[in-house]
Length: 220
Image 1: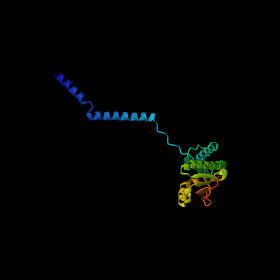
Image 2: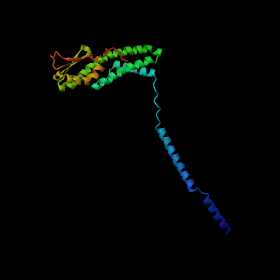
Image 3: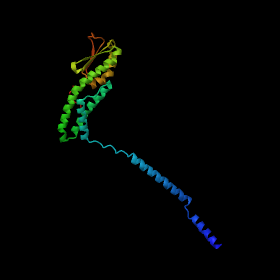
Image 4: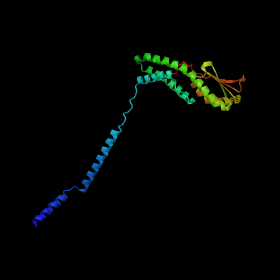
């Protein structure tokens, strides 16, 4: 009897030595946290965070622009619509700023390349601006045909004079409104003169002369 009582006490002691509910909860929470951390590590290994982009130096940016200009000189960008011409002119204008930034570096090793870049950009501009004006005139001629506006070019192969003929251009207010709509393009593409007439025989035509630089001038 005494032996049975002793065994019972041992069994009760063993039961009492087991983990409490609080310990079980802590153990469960730790396993859950370990599982989450393990899953996060596996995800990071499968999809590593990309390294932040390395900021280019002024010299690197200069040479990148120089190479872009060389490519443009060999193969001008394709023009499909009038907005393409505007975008391409903006890119060429940015190259002038790249040259200016290159000069600001005061790097003697860049001196020759800056000079060469300037000469190349002048060459590109002399070829590009007449081409852009010619393309702009073609787009405008197509666009305004349905409104019975005759679009004519002047200035020979430079295409730097444009004339618009329509009966409504007998009204100065119509001329001013129309001119305001195209004026940014007229300046951007370095036209030298815009003429408005109500007929091709109108000897009292009205003209505008924007102050635009020559095609070979780099505008910094």
